[in-house]
Length: 169
Image 1 (cartoon, rainbow, N blue to C red):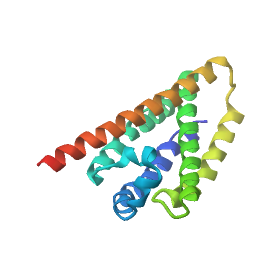
Image 2 (image 1 turned 180 degrees about the horizontal axis):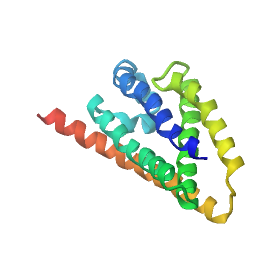
Image 3 (image 1 turned 90 degrees about the vertical axis):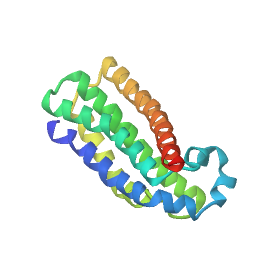
């Protein structure tokens, strides 16, 4: 199991670099998305690339932190939290692929989603083959998924606050 823990932050870095590099350009050059999908694109209105990078960095902290803790101090609780975060990451790759299909064009994150998705699935299958899944594991995994969803909201608010600060300078 130990050999799987550090794959999560590696996949995260690879995937999110594509987003950081491309999202600013993508949203600036696809303004029609704000009209077609106002609820979805509201989260990305008036953001800066630096603000987006800060949000990605903030999201990376729990990914890397839990992975490192599980690597150096393997135990049932940390493994379950790691599994929940890995599952959330893998599910979010499906979302990006769906977004690209929905709008009918490439979005920054599609290439690495297509590359990382099979890896994420294999990692999860391998992990579930190694560990004993009981009620505590499922509860901690769900807590990790919910925590990552809440953290995503926080990261988006951080992105907007930092983008506003940069804009006001």
